[in-house]
Figure (cartoon, rainbow, N blue to C red):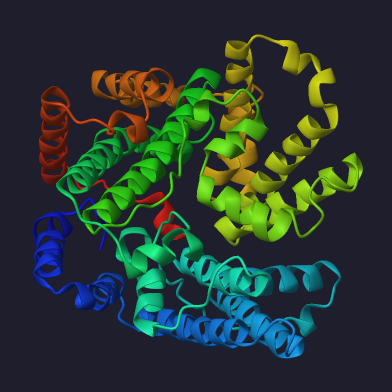
Length: 472
């Protein structure tokens, strides 16, 4: 089930809100948990068993860690933390990376002339929706309890509600337990909070349906074509950069809005990332919850920037390698992560001595955007050869067949040009949803209502409605 669907908008959401506000306060977390399991299991009910298993393991581990005094049995606490981490990483490894690992193992043996030692199997696991998000979220709870940064949750229903909460279950933001622990126990429900939640949801829907879907069609046409003129290739790559931003930030806005409707305040997940003047700044603005998770649970434990510049560069490379792998079991994602890791390390090592940092901010923003767009090619392309071929078109080193003129006739239609123009304005000149919705006026409410009506109309007329981050 996706947010941008008629069933969710006109059946699931109204019914959920109605039942929630009719339910006595003590039963609301239980109801929200049941609704979340219904939401998650809509496409495949078996997925709920996997999430329940992860929830149960981390609840027990958190109870063991939190219920054991640090000065008492340190070994017992460490074992519980180890079980939590291994269980969650094991689930990710089995369902997300096992086939990738097997393919590369067989390829390595074949290259070495040892085909007979390869493992052949026709069995392949189905990737459960959102497993990367809820395993990271659940695992962070055990780590925070072990560190003493969060108290352990005695109420299993409240903890299950935290892990499974449907607004942010399948595509984030990744919420640390300490950010909602108090809200699980006591939270306020006001008309102001609810209204802002509706505004967040409607604006997120508009980003997704009105902008991301249009940009996505351009990107699909360009990336599915063969060699093309360099202008068309850049146009398609920029369209994908807009698509993935509006797709994911739109989903995050809808998730934050739904959270507000149910009384929860979730953290900000995007902060105009394409206004960044460096890759370092980009990662402070893009997918903030993942950046925070990687920093807190990988970068800092590896030593962060405390052991000199060479070690800092290595730490950044390792963290972004794992960040790329987290997005998907593919060499393309790994290369994407390594590119960002290398750029982060370069910026950190050069600091303010580089000419790059002496340029005016608009030029640095433009340069950063170009680097991000080039890296997105690996994120979007289906295979590594596909990515390299596409980059060849972007930099004018690929042969351009006559048939490539057909691409221009498709992607430069007035509708697509209008979508790209509006996307550019929203990316670089419009206020953020987080700020714009702080005070809702009559004029703003009218604009929001019109955007939502237009979004619903387009949902009715179009069948193209992918959610990129559902694949992660």
